Length: 136
Image (cartoon, rainbow, N blue to C red):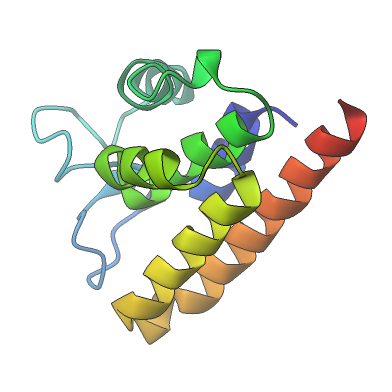
């Protein structure tokens, strides 16, 4: 599974959860982050372009080894590019350390309505990263 396939699988389709500060979200792209974009009619292809430009490339994921690029990209989408960049600088190129920091971040948020989904996604990300590591 590619990093993009993974993110799109977890981000899914159109949502508008009142507890999510992003507001209307489609393919994980939020109205808050992209106020001038027609989120409701956002296509999967447009979402991929945004992810490649504003997440993958901004973090230099194309230059990172796998599985680190995989976990960094996923975290950037789920936790923000700035936070993913800080964790990348602090993880010592260890994807497991990066994921540990991500889990600690979720625990500190104290958002019980989202924590199970975040944990499931992070554990799935770890499993996918482990497959990449083993196949390398």
